[in-house]
Length: 446
Image 1 (cartoon, rainbow, N blue to C red):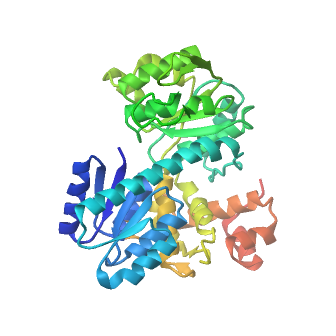
Image 2 (tube, rainbow, N blue to C red):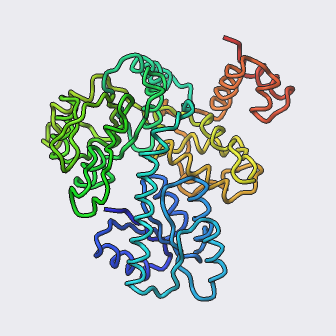
C-alpha cells in the first residue's frame, strides 16, 4: 500500500489527516515541521507528501522546492487557507500535484490523494519499463578514498568479472544501489538493462505482478498484458533492494525462478526463459533472519555467491570531507556552491550520521536551500550536528580538524595528479596558500 507523509505544525490537524488516510488503508506517517519532513524523506521513501503551506522555519513551499530539486519520487499536495490561494498557485507552478483548502472535505481529500498516489505508481512503472530499460546510465561516482572504500571497490571490480549473484550488505543510506550499478556497469552486461525494485515497497500481489508480469484479465484491474521485470531485465541485471523484507511466499516463488531460469506471468501456464544476473541488497542480518525462520536458507545461498559489505559512514570518517565537497559543489538552480569553514567541517566529521550518506546529502541540500552561498559556519548546521559532543582523547575513530584538512588536500592533489593550479581551484584557495599547506603538513607526492 502507498506511503504518505503528512506535514503540519498543528498536531490536531495532523492527527486528523493521518487517521482519515490510515482508515482508507494507506501507510501514513507524520512530521511536525518542514525540517522534520526533510529528515524523514532523506531516510525513507513516500509516494505522497501532504503539507501545510505556512509553518515556522521551513515553509511548505520551501519543502516542495527541496523535494523537486532533490528529484524525489513523491507527489506533493499542499494545504492552504483561503488567504493563501496565490501561494498555492505558485506551489502548482513549482510542481505540486494539487492544493486543498482547509478545512478539508474527507471525500475530496481521499479522491485527490488516490489520484496523486496513482500518478506516482504510473510514473514508477514508466521508469522501470521504458527509461531504465533503454537508457545506458553514466558511470556512477563512488566518492571516498578510505581503506574501507578502496577494498569495497576492489571487491566490486572482482564481482563484475564474474556472472555470480552478489549480495550487498549495509545500513540504510550507505549507497547499496550505487555499488550495484557499479558492478553492473563494469560487467559484460553493461550494455543491457539494469532494473531496480524495492522488495519492501509493495504488497505480495503487486510485487508478484512486478516481478513476473501478468496477462490481460488475470485479475481485476489487469486491463492489458504487462511484461514483468525479469523479462524486461533479460540479458542484464535485476537489483533486488531490501530483499530481507520479502514475504515467505515470494521467497519461494523467487527461488523457483532463480533455480529454473524461467518465469511464468500471472494468468498463464506458459513459461519464458530469462537470462538475468541477480544483485540483491539488505540492511538486515540475513543469517539471523534464517536462524529465526524469517528468511529461507536456500534462497540466501542462491543470492550470496559473493558478499560485499558497505560500511556505515561513521566507520569511514575520512570520507566525509570529500563527500561534503562533492555534494556542496553541485550548483542547484542558480544557487552558488557552498563553502564550509574548518570548524563546520569538523562538526560534520564528528557527527555519527545514523542515516549515512543519504542523510549527509540531505543536510547539504538543506543548507543550499537555506543559504545564498558564502561560508557555512557551525551555527548554520542542524541542531543535532551542533550538539555532537567534543572529540574525546581516547577515541581513535575521531579525526582532528588538522587531520581532516590534511587528508582532503592529499586526496585532491592525488586526484589532480599534483596539478597545483587545478587542485587550488578545487579547494577554492590560491596556490600560495596551497603550497604553504603542503609544506606545513609535510604532504609528499607518493
